[in-house]
Image 1: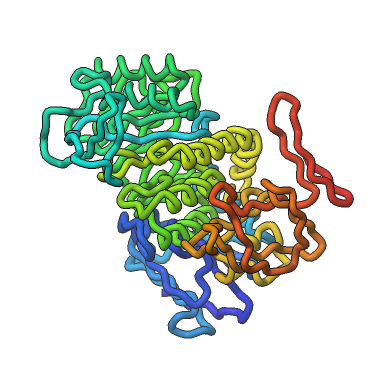
Image 2: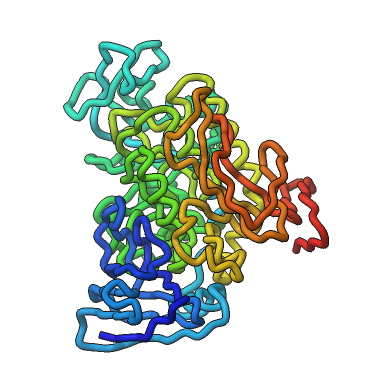
Length: 500
């Protein structure tokens, strides 16, 4: 047990992926990975914390810990690990970036994502379960190419999914690739056997991988319980938090010697930023989970895990099309952007609803492609201690309001974009979403609405802002410049601004 004196204006961050939390003053967190994706669960525990007082601690242990940042006594921080050995690194720094950079010196820098991983991806189950023809066009029914509606059933049936259409082609992974192309949606990567009960035959996966590559889509392989990597896999996803990630990346490097290896995990027992990215989907597609996930991603970045993403629309359940749209919109501005499909009765694809909804989702996938140069630059900054998704305190350290949880439902993507997701179903009589408590920092800054060009002064809280379904509250910081690639730039001039 270690006891520290807590300053009145001292705030604490870290601990890993503490779901629903990023600023821990007055709270107690557990340093133990439990694999729970809902509020208060811990997807990836990291025995590391830092404070705005200018220091951090990294405990060299895998033992369960409890960090009390003033819940029991507001003047004390009480840190404990159930281990007989006290082994701790103390890190001194003048900024969050310095502290995180020093943390990486001890544990390894975040790896650079391959370019394709910054685009939209799909994880789908094509190896178990079955499709039954639906009796009605209900919310759980999916319309297929034969103009009939089908729903996913757990029990076996006549229409089974497959990788290459060995059974019914329209239920295959190949058909899903064709579907994305037919609807005009850019799909960059796919894992076709998510949580399979039956391993795919190597030749089947090789055939699918070749087909995916012919469609400019990168195929990945989901490895369960140490299952060896399939040939022709460009990246891998593993479900066992104790997996040897070094061995997985080594196999990927052998399979693709000219490509950057990419391994995805959904939880972790150790700091994994140098070897893997966190991609999870066991969240429900409802309003309450959106707010939880925003804080989760913020906390992950402040714990040294900058590459993280949650499935758009979640994996289970989904209230309605409005929630699906709003969830996909804000996740277009997160490090990993993807859906997990065929794990619940409801389809999670971006073309599962009507044409109006599909057009909105297609527009955000297109916007994501335009942001790729910016995201790639942020990925490089992440190696030096600057997460992609950042709380207000990192961009505006002199504003104390950003250190706590008052505005935990908004975030910065880098230093140039502020995103304030729609987090509830509050709307007016015309169906416009109403967003309260949008805080735009710094009274010297002009913020420009990304979609309308409206200019708003910083240093203020804005209430009852109305947004149609297609518009997400996104604001560009005055003085920003975006490189869209191919010598195309978008400038938002304000005063004297320099972009490097």
